[in-house]
Image (tube, rainbow, N blue to C red):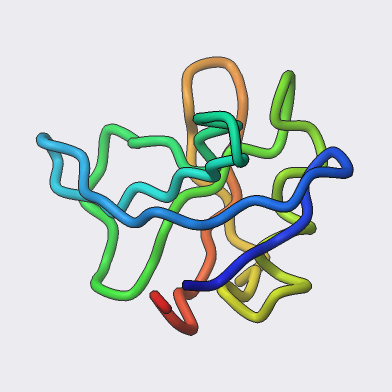
Length: 95
């Protein structure tokens, strides 16, 4: 199971899927429970192999951990997410 560091804590990754549209979900778990949800579910269906990462508010700097760990690669594209924009990332591994 792949681990990343977020907010100075070692976290394991858990992949899932949102219900509608069926976009991938990525959650980080610390030893004592859920730490953060890295992804958001935009109103559009993403192409296979892509994920929308929330990188603002309580998830400020969220993108850094999975990129450094080689989990995702930032494409430089953004997708509307309410009043913010989420980073579109290419999924490199789901390990």
